[in-house]
Amino acid sequence: MPMLLIKGSFHLKDTAPDGDTVHFIADNPDEWQLVGGKNPVQLTAAGHAKLRLEGIDALETHYHGAHQPLPHAHAAAKELVEWLGFTAVQRDPDESVTASTPATTPGFVLTRGADLYGRVIALVGKGSPPGTSGTEIPVDAALLKKTANHHMVSEGLAYPTFYRSLFKDLRLELTAAAQQAEAAGKGVWPDDVSLSGVKVTGLSSIENDSVILPKLFRRLVDYLKLGMPITWFPAYLAGQGDPVTVLSTGERFVGLHNVIEVSNGDLVRLSHPAADLLFDEG
Image (cartoon, rainbow, N blue to C red; front, side):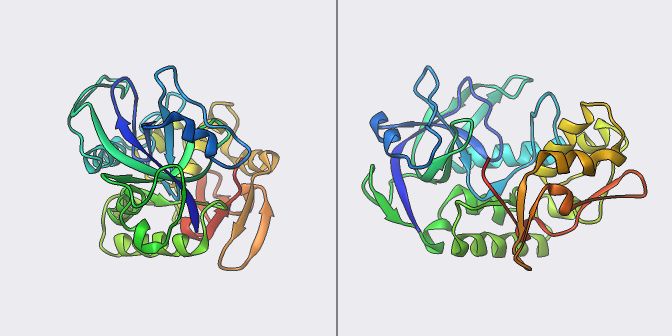
């Protein structure tokens, strides 16, 4: 799988990194113009690109004023920045970083595009890059294992969450890492109720009480803010029309109501494991 390599450094101050997002400055900003796909990379006024780690999804520390259970969400955020080489990270109550040691750390990204919001969808590495910045290099499972993406899944601090931009061999490696973490009882897995179901009685029931796939959490937050009964949640999902493929069967659906079920009036669950689902980019 060829991916564009960009060398640079990670920055935390005045940003709010969580378990799957962090800011990055390219040594050569012109190299952002080389990123493929239909969505251009959006840079901040300080020249930062916001990275969204490909193939993984960590619990939300802040999403439209809501959060997932904070012990797990904060553990993921802490692990990512420490893996990148930061220590003594200080944050405001809003999760914004006020100081860190050091101020920056060197690293690189491997990418094939940006999302609708201009965030770079990337595999993230630390230290010296495995090739020449500004060029495409082959990425296999061995290189994937050296990334933050693989590390976070291996520690059970992020769910495997796949979009079509990620090739099959890399998906399979992340799936295997997640299965090993689950079997070992690491991270979120002992508390995960994505498949068994969460009783949704209001926002607090998914903020504080239950650990679920972040994509499901985000859809529930958006829906609960509308003030409608949870029994109508499948109809809401059908209206959103998100395409999804079940990898184990090859079935392709339009609408997440095909893989998210509501039963007994308020019990919401995934009908397939996260790693068995392939989503389309927005």
